[in-house]
Image (cartoon, rainbow, N blue to C red; front, side):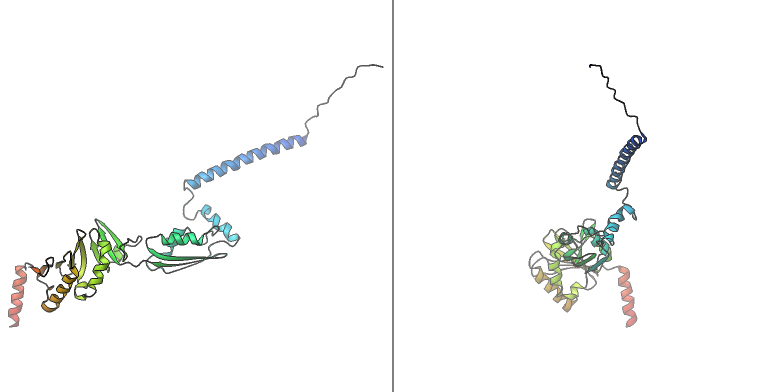
Length: 284
C-alpha cells in the first residue's frame, strides 16, 4: 500500500536555560572588555608616570607580593659610606627597603656601583630570602677644581665626584685652570715637604697647562717655573725660613727664571705707615 507521508520538524521553543546561557555569554564578553580596557588604562597611567607619586599603592604592590613569599628587601646592611647617603646607593641599584628582590642580580648591582664616579670598589651579596649586604669604598675627596664658573670635588686622580657639594669641603685645596685636576696631586706631594708654604696656600692656578702660580693667605703670589719647579719651591722655602721671604709687605715672588728671585714689594698705605711710625715713637 502506497501513500504519501508528510514529515513535520517541530521547532523547539526557547527555554529559560537558553536565555540564561546567552546572558552569561554576553556578561562574560562585557566583563572581558572591561578588564582589557582597565589593563590598557593602567598601563598608560604607569607609563606616563601618573602613579609614581610618593606613597602610591601601585609602587608598593611588587614589594607586598614579594613579602608574601619572603622575597622582599626587609634586611639591608650598607657599610663604607662616608660622604653619601644610603638612599643614593640604593637608588642606583634599584632597591627600596621593603621592595621586591625578585630577579635581583648581585653581580649586576656591583658593576653598577663600581661604575659610579664616587665609588672605588663595591661588594654586593644577596642572602636569601630577604637579606642584602652592600659594602663599598668611596673615593677620597682630594681637592676642589674650579673650571669656569663650576666647582668640582675631585679625587687624587683628578676624577670629578658627583653628589658632593664643594661648599661643604672648604678645607680642601682649591685649584683652577685646565689640567689642574690631574696635576694637583704632584703639587701637594711636593708642598708637603714645605709646610711653611703649604699651610699658607689657599689656591693654586695652572697656567697654560705648564706651570703653577700659588696664592697665599697673606695675598702674596708665588710664580713657579715650568721646569725644575721643585727646585724653585725648595729655594723659596729656604729663603722664607732664613729671610722671611713670604712675610707681609711682599706682593709677589717670581721664580720663573732659573737661579733668580724677583720680588715685588707691595705699596703700603700712607695711613698704615703713619700708624706704624706713631707706634714706634711711643715705644722709645
